[in-house]
Image 1 (cartoon, rainbow, N blue to C red):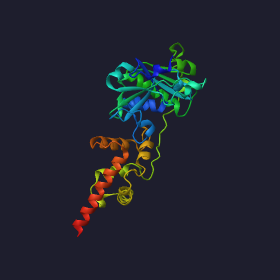
Image 2 (cartoon, rainbow, N blue to C red):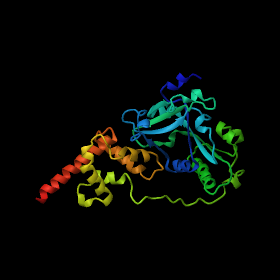
Image 3 (spheres, rainbow, N blue to C red):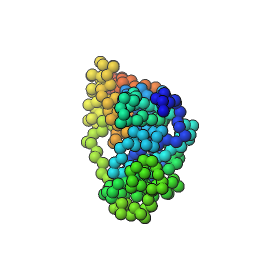
Image 4 (cartoon, helix red, strand yellow):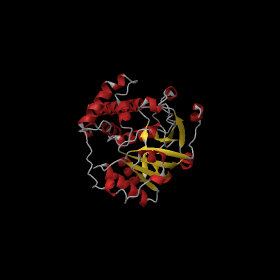
Length: 298
């Protein structure tokens, strides 16, 4: 296959999305893929079409580099590329700039990146689910069981494997039934506890967007307000770390992900193209508020 073939835009008839077993269970439970964001990351942002800041990474090949490494458990979603292509912008991405051509141990990642205006895509595009589990595990076994059950409840064909090669090739002849996998799937679903930092990096930016008085701000938001007025306004080409914080929060498993989506919604509504534009707009807002409050006080 020629390298130029990967430059053709548009989704292929079938696409594949690989994810962890726990993430797959969440996707099937919620009924949506939660998308990553390109905003705040210059490398990711250069691929994104205008006004489509969210994306889902998929592959044209079920056995390419994205499926090369197989861990203790994995899930591959088989997607209807035509359904996706009719609703979303799809572009082939050669993330490593064809470095794979000079590495005999690698193949093209054949990524078809699905770009969206919104942070979610319905799982109506899912044609099949293929789950792999290597051995019984406290966490992976019950979540694999959930993947099987939720797929069945949604009427999606689902296949289970304990052979990594059969899973990569989706050789359903070697799939095993839940009854055959009883020992692999046993165990109670553990309670997941998520670490919550004392203060969110992005929540304070939301405060500065929504609130209108200094007295209503939390200490973290007040500190940011002060920094924006007395430092940020003097350096309009700097974003006070907002790009980095948004980039860190761009994936659905990050605790700041909901706040990042709210910031993107605000930016789109106010036609702010980059994080630095948002920072400057918020700095000006609070500088105006500060001046007005001082006038009222006098």
